[in-house]
Length: 344
Ligand SMILES: Nc1ncnc2c1ncn2[C@@H]1O[C@H](COP(=O)(O)OP(=O)(O)OP(=O)(O)O)[C@@H](O)[C@H]1O
Image (cartoon, rainbow, N blue to C red; front, top):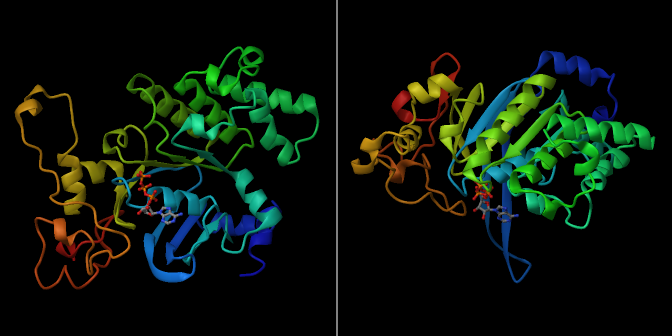
């Protein structure tokens, strides 16, 4: 394990041949638990933000992780970005484990993975103009030559629809609209030509009018450059137009994953069914219709329910089983996996 990280810093190594054999990203029984301490030293428990999560992502594939607020989506994203250390399991990227990355190898990994955050204004340093914001990662990652850096900055600004570049790059973040700021964040994520982008709720803080444009832009850059994309959202309605595959997260775990059509047309987990039933669509009859939302609140991740974590809210709970035994993952249809005893 100790030398796996160093493979990431070198492009033509055994890591590349391993990458041919397995998906670009392999997340294997990943755990990110945060310790809770009283008075700074007394351990009083832990938050099981990500618990036993497994999935993979191929080069150029777009997948979505969807789930309610607090289910652990951002903790998962931040762990994949190397910002949180996993407390268990493993993440492999292009054949190499991230577990022991540090220093140069972590830096090399970060160049390969772009990050688009939820809050574009918070993501952009307010005291830097756009040119400096975009030039900084190029300098940090050793792209020498001012002309080359400027060429790349112009190219990235054009790609995200911010033109003319030489006018835009003089501006500071506060001089741009929320949508334009998010375009700068996307340009920054692209500028090092990553193999994967993680977009964590990229439109949830934007006006409804620009959300579709930003989602379209992300899809465009993903397809144009063959970048793998992990799109994280609480909004199931954006999934269909966007990703090949969707995963549903509940209380720190992935409870269902499937090709998007299969998941949306024929969900297998009662939670996914409830999320779909709660979706708003433009049918005027909805104004008078009562929605079937799951009863109760999402559980605490400090002391999640035993057995299936959804069982206290599940309308189809099997007494004697679901409260005691965590469901295994079943695959009732090809490529459609679900962790629910109803499907076992
Ligand atoms: N650094 C941390 N230390 C302790 N607990 C944390 C930390 N980061 C997140 N958590 C907890 O982990 C749980 C999952 O949080 P997370 O932000 O990952 O969820 P989320 O699904 O992204 O929610 P949201 O969409 O509201 O951001 C929450 O209970 C949160 O309080």
